[in-house]
Length: 159
Image (cartoon, rainbow, N blue to C red; front, side, top):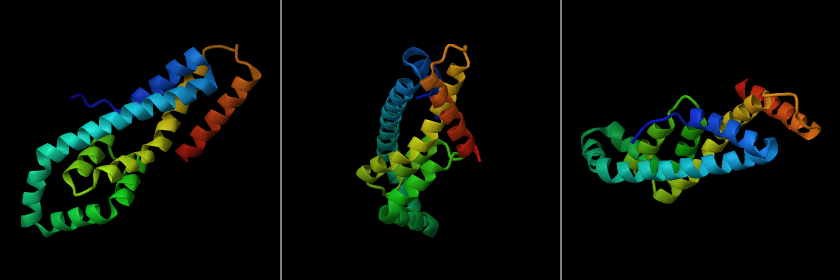
């Protein structure tokens, strides 16, 4: 398995799909493709860590009270914890997937928490779309309006 940052792939997808299909349809297609790919990747990481590392976590739970407390929190409030971890751009995507797998989080709760990657993914796709728009002045009025919206959303998210 290869660890490639999600943001690099999302910017690339925004650029490629916006260049191929135009800004508005390109963003929708890029978000759909990236979210499906991210979901598949996350579920594979979850299953891999659940079946390869869960026994080790159970050993830590017996030995350390902190590990037991973390596991209990993940059993009771996994959706909230995983969703908030996914919203934080400083925590790598794959680390959250493995945390969900080794903890007591249910698989459907883990899958629902994947909605938390959408804001960051949309932002990076909009950055890629904006980059593709700088290729020339052949933009229609609607595409210029979408470009302006994408730049403003990107600026608002960065603040």
